[in-house]
Length: 173
Image (cartoon, rainbow, N blue to C red; front, top):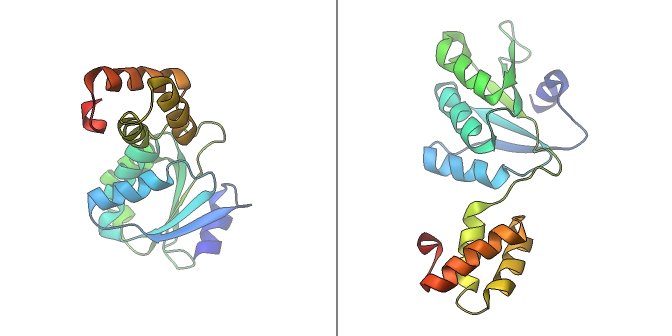
């Protein structure tokens, strides 16, 4: 099913990453998606029909609503159906169409755009919280920016706030 889904998806296939089934619980599913948010390779998932709408909602929230994706349902079978669009569009369609939630489902999601990887905000706050205990704000900002992809200016602003407040962790920044 993976090869067939990649072949019909129309998304880049030079490099892809098969992730299998995402966790059933929303919190764990969002955490798994968060870990994949900056993955540049095309992502392939299997999903249970009763969870497809929630998974697409979570994907739109975590990976970005405009990320292109394909939902392949019942591949190589009589009722094969292919849905293409942004994660936002696919989530709306899954909520509206009964047939969307039937059969075996394979999701193919475009990888993160090169250079637009974004900043891992959670890691930024955690790094600043930990480093602020040991280093001056300028050094904290330099290290945190390298670790997370944040700009040095943004990291420095958080580091100076952490130093001024004697922050103990990310919740205090």
